[in-house]
Image 1 (cartoon, rainbow, N blue to C red):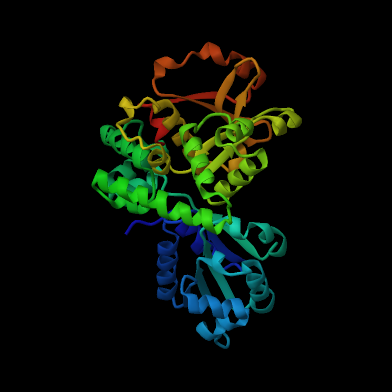
Image 2: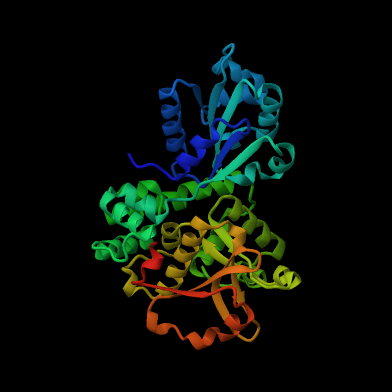
Length: 400
């Protein structure tokens, strides 16, 4: 059975007193992961209860009184119980619920909870639960996990050897590129990856687009769901571009504050990410426009209804850049990943600050011949401690 990378992180956090909170978009496998962890803990002799808040009778009891939890999960003298709660955002006051349990029962109860959107719990979580919880954010499958779900152990072993520097070339290189082409088109939602028929993949992506995103919108109390949905479609067609709130406002015929609120919702529902500019001057950084990326490529492509082999796509450079962004987030915190652009047109796709004023830069091109190193002289002179890497189709750096 394929295992998510977050599995190990969550298992390692179980002994900690802090509550463990797993957040991420709908349909990315949080509930499955919760059950896998529960099974593993039970096999080790732990006392584990699994609570699903989509069961209305359970939800009503917990909303009425936090301590009603123990009707479903009895305390045991001299033993810590582990309570796994799926979809905690359905509680009327998730923060208050967790705060009371931590303050009164932390020595006897460990909570492991999932939430489909940070939007519902974000406002109170940081303050009221400071020091009481650790949040883990899980994205859709990355390319390594994609290979695992596709049951390609030989490719994963080969990839591991290359990542460790034990070998330079892969005998499976053609397979890597064919599978990456599939990943770029259909993304990393687990059910989509496991579906082998390409038309079936599109139908599953339509379901995510039409049903699950709509639930996000409705539960976020957005007034005009059609406008927010249209905004997401526009952003999908412009991934990798600067995000101009004024232009979006004019396009959608809504005011700037509404656009900003919708962007906030889409970020908190894990559908988009904003990348800030890289500057030595912090004031400049704060006033410059960010770039926008979709968090899953399959979702991006179903929103614009465009599926084709990478080499035939008109947007192949944009698609590859969006993938590179996801790849960088596998290794770095989001605040470490920036882009660089000057008023006179000099730019670099990504600048990664791995330590204070040091790191590396990445420029993404579909073809190697598109790269003209002379274009990057200004950046190289200004930031000598950020060597430039060129990632292009056929360069294994895109996969490693």
